[in-house]
Image 1 (tube, rainbow, N blue to C red):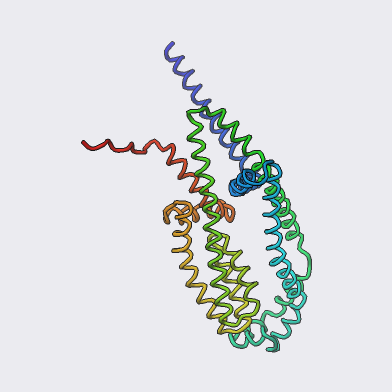
Image 2: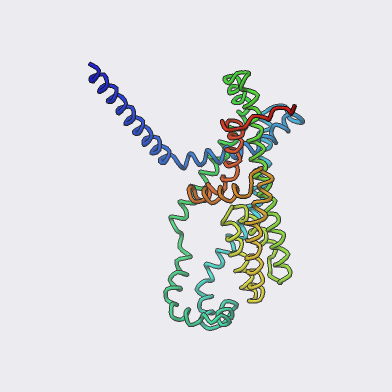
Length: 352
């Protein structure tokens, strides 16, 4: 009888373990299948937490209707982003289009040692390589004129994702008081105070990250503008603005900015290109090891080691989106650990 009971208990435990494993596999598969929507939701929550304090302040002081205050904040944010996009993307697209149209002509000039590209190739001794691969380069230049279906599909997906993020973040901010009230009512008086404190800390962490990231990008843009201005590179303001926007991206942003500025400087003159390249090599070290850890560790209240490790791990696990969300996510985890960690030491007893 005892052996039969033991066998039944063992079989029941085995079935429970198998069921848990299957449920875990199904959950992971569901997360993987819906990863794009989940990423959109995370990005929307990130922006909702960042914009909610502005909506709350506007609702308290000027506009008493939540829907109108939310709409005004989102309209202002959209207008600012649209103005920046019009200022940067439109001239950039025009320049890229003109470059694609002139690419075959520039190739012929380069082979003859004429034009800025040809003179640059003569200086660096690359005309032999160009002459040996001219047919491949010409075919690639012709393909630049042809519309790419993959690029159009990526653009369409990006537009859909952007609209989804805007709508989700708008609804999150609009319904935030109702959601917060429901959660606090379900939590009860004993837990409501702690959860409100956690919510304030999470909001401060996200806003601190945004402030710190914007400050670093502003520093990068201003220094880039000064270097380009001193070296005589044309369109210094536009290039510096592109570099500042690229620098918003953790880890790879400074590298993208280096490529943009260095290419423009080398086309202007080899001396300017070398100066700009040396500047960015030095600046990347300063940004990666000083500005990012110090400014963001103060804004998010994370130590520099945690900032760097969070960036590296998140970029490896989730790519660009992971790198963008790594620091606020680490700050949120730190807030939760500070509140719920079982190993927190109690305050020392009074002396005497």
